[in-house]
Each structure stands twice: as structure tokens, then as C-alpha cells.
Image (cartoon, rainbow, N blue to C red):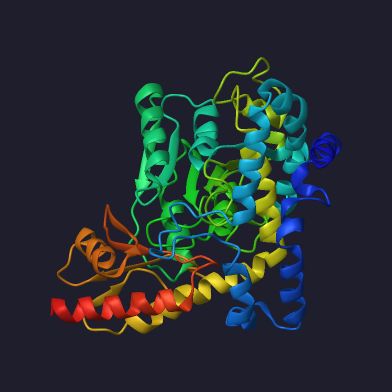
Length: 431
């Protein structure tokens, strides 16, 4: 009981995830520190191949050993410390919801906002915490004052929920929604930038660009697109669902006006967590997606009026940040890129096998699309799971037809060896 009183007292004073008694500090900090000290002189690229170091990271996850999960581009599993944080604070909430949620755990949002802003390189007053990229980006899409005839430029390879949101605005408000189409992979930024620029008209108000194309992992030249757009007086929304927590960057580096992301992908935060960033000077003009008593306020918190929300998930985000920061953003990016190239380089020359993603570092990181001639994506996905217990996702979207393979830091080389053997065998059988 005394330990419990101390735990609750600690929560009252600080945000649990960022206190000295955080779950990460209790469970993993010592092992992570020891592993980091051993490799402190290695570059991120050299460290990417150090299996002893990454074994320490892998052991922090609780993934099912009977399934090789290579669909981390959809939702990534959370490490043990994040799961335990959500469970601990959920139990606490249910002991007296209105007291513990609003009286205790609600105090954790501001420290969390600050920590997220530090990772994103933003002002904390530009960060709103929500549930996923769809909510973050729909907040922006529906928050603009747009008039009939105003134009928005996007791409057919953007995420479906964003496409649907713009089409709904076009139907309801009479705006014009233009969609470009790209044949990926593309290893020339100027080709992409010029495609957006050619689509601009005097009525263009917004360009919507996806940082990493979720279907095949193409990294888009966001900064170059933004600079071009700003030269034309056009604002830019960036869908960062697959880049935040994966690539080593700061959001202001992109120079975009608006940014939305999911935290349950490569950051490995609890499922159903996301983040919105709006440049401070633009907050006032964006309507909140859900009602707020001061919709024209310049306070970023107007986008967080969700009603009753999951405070345990917010504490879980904090522990995910602890976990991510203990590894280091650059190290994480290089390891996951190494894992993608590890399998992709070994299958790219197999007869009948086609890659749909560049293997150059500037154009891809975690996600890679692969197909086998004469085989539907769904059939390849089924064969990989039924025979090898490899879970991937089939992609049939516009001009993209492949399976998407996405490793994460917990993925082992043995898992990827199995994938290579599987693709090799299936391709030979298909000949």
C-alpha cells in the first residue's frame, strides 16, 4: 500500500512516463545503457549491422514467435514497457475514473506535448495529441476556409482516407481536387516537383503531399515541393504517417505548414495514438474538427476537445518516447533501412521477382514492395502466410500491385532469411 501511495503521489507531481521512476527506467534503462556504451564509438550505419546490440532491443518486444510480422507499415507492436504503462494506468483509471483520469493523469498531457515537440523539433504550442494520422489530417482538411472553385492538388497514391476527405470537400463545398499519378519508384526529385508545379493554376490554394508513400515506401521530396509551392503562395499539408519515428528529421526541416502523423507505427506507441503539428501563426484560421467553445483561438489545444479520452494511452506514448530516444533516431533509421535492404538485395535478381521500391537511401527506408510475375498480390500474400507464417499485406491500388514488406527494430535476420527463402521457392514454382 505504501508503494501504491508513493506511485500516486509521484503521478501528482510529475508525468509518470518522464519521471525518474518511469517504467522504462525500471525495466530497460540499465540494459539499454550498457548496450549503448559498448557501441558508443560506432557510426549509425556500422551499428545497423551489430546483431548483439539489436538483440537487446528485440528482447524488449513481446511479438508472437509463431508469426513473422512484416506488416509494420500498418501498425507496429508496442514494446513491453509501453504495454505495461497502458495496463497500469488503465487499472488506475478504473479505480475512480473521474478522479484519477481528470485529477491525476490529465496532468500528464503537457509534459507529453513538450516531449513530442522536442522529438519533432517544434514549439510545444504547435503540437496537438490525437488518435491517428486520419484524425490529424482530417482536422486540417476540414479546417480550411475554402470557396467553390478553389483547387487542391494531391496524388492518386496518397492514403485513401485523405483522398476521401478531399473528395468529400469537393462534393460538399465545390472545391476542385486534382490528383497526380506517379509510377514509382522514382529516383529523381525534380520529376516529382515539376509534376506538382505543372498542376498549379491561379486557383490552387493547397498541395497535399505524403512524406513516405504507404504502398511502396517512396520517400517524397517534401522540402523541395514546399519551397516550390511557397514560391507560388500555396500552403502545403504533409502526411507524415510513415516517417515520424522512422526517419531522422525535424518537422520544421520539411518547411510544410501542416503535418499529421500516427504514433502507433514506427514510434511503437499504443495503438490509436497520433499527433498534429500546425505552424503557430496558422492555428487561428483552422477550424477544429470537433466542436470547441473558441474555434478561432490560436491555442493548439482547441484541436483536442475529444470529450472523454484515453489517458492511459497518453502515458503509453510517453514510454514509447523513452524507448525511441534510448535507441536514437538515426540509429533506428539506419537499422530499419539495413533490414529492408538485407532481404530486398537478395531477391531483386531472382527471375520473375520484381521490386517496386528504390533501394537507394534517399528514396526509401523501411517499406519495400515485391511481386512475382504471373502471381496476384493476394495469392503471394496467402502463400507467404500459409506456408511460411509470414504476415505481409497485398497492395492493389491504382497502378501499384505487389505485397508490402515492412520490418521493424524487433525483426531478426533469421526472419528475413525465411522471407528470402520463401520468395525464392515461390518464384521457382511459378516459372
